[in-house]
Length: 510
Image 1: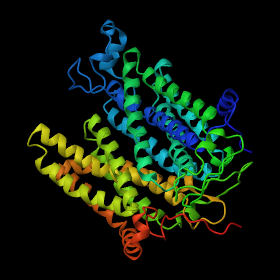
Image 2 (image 1 turned 120 degrees about the horizontal axis):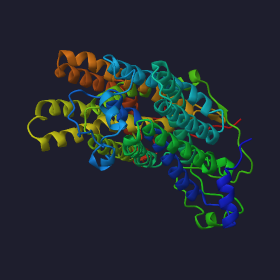
Image 3 (image 1 turned 180 degrees about the vertical axis):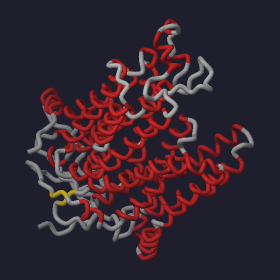
Image 4 (image 1 turned 60 degrees about the horizontal axis):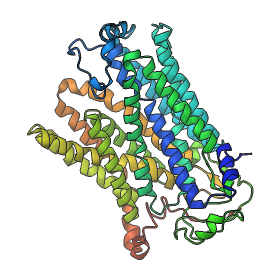
């Protein structure tokens, strides 16, 4: 039996009444935004500390990559042991094969993260998402902190750091399926693309926050650059445990996406009396429901058979391969800015057109000429380079953000799921887990192809974008056919991916 979060009980006792449905949804957006920003923040220390573990012999003393600049460098630490360590590195990473060891740690993290995603999604649809997410965040924080404790314990065994990263990758895998499942439970299809596109900014906020946290304490010892972000995500996990309302039915609401109905509030919800009937048509069905609705979680194979899951998962494999390879080269702030704008724009367009696959395919196809233009004219001037990078980043990140958010939520509430089946976390895990494999493969292929020239790398990226678009051809045709056959219904923006892909209809309940 799921219980009401302690923090919600405290707020109820102070206010003397419950929140409205709309207030709960705003609160869910806020809590899940902070939660996944914490996940991304805790992943940044490794990239910040690499230059300390294996100092670049060609780097000029006193110059540091963003965001490690003079703002974070304390003058009174110039002559201490930490400053000396900055140039000597940390065994075993300061040896000739240090970069290889750091690369192995990254690959191990991504491998465990990708594989763990499938398990996490399967468990997320069967366990209490609030407790599952909170435990995942706390576990991530513990192992991120233990990696940093290697500095204070004077650990120089490679296996120690490898195991810590692998364990952290497994716990990190709990995050994305859980937060998407929670959002999908509270929000119907209406404006889901735009809402989740804006909400997806937590990725960039977390990356920036994690970089700043890790860099700000680096002069006190690289171990602190792991411990502080680790403590940050642990505090986020405690917040999730105390406040996250994971399921609408636990608070008197039953949300069935795609079914039009008025709001029937719980008896003690005075604010809901004011907003009665304001739930947008075609978005949610909210009825009074005392007690909890038990829903059956689906298996991985059953989730894979949902129409649209495999094409989108394979599309994301190539989309993430391109995104993680290309965006890795961009200046940090440009990659984050382009990512935010691309995700919001793709979500907004897909809502207006009622066509997720068509939007995603259009973006990846547009990325091909944008990458070609960047390769051809990127060296003309700094301003041209910046403009072309932001445009390319927008088209590359748009479909990636759309598929991992709104599309995953749509497919997790597909009409083929009979009765009270639940597949939000499982579907999200299958799609993003497959994409994460591509994210790990992209930089590996780049390292090999770059020895033959950067033209070969760009050809790989453009071929990857082309394949990503072609994989969605069947869904695009279905959407266009549906739009042609039923233009009035499509203009309302309530359908996407065709009747056979993501339109969640209320079936006969048994």
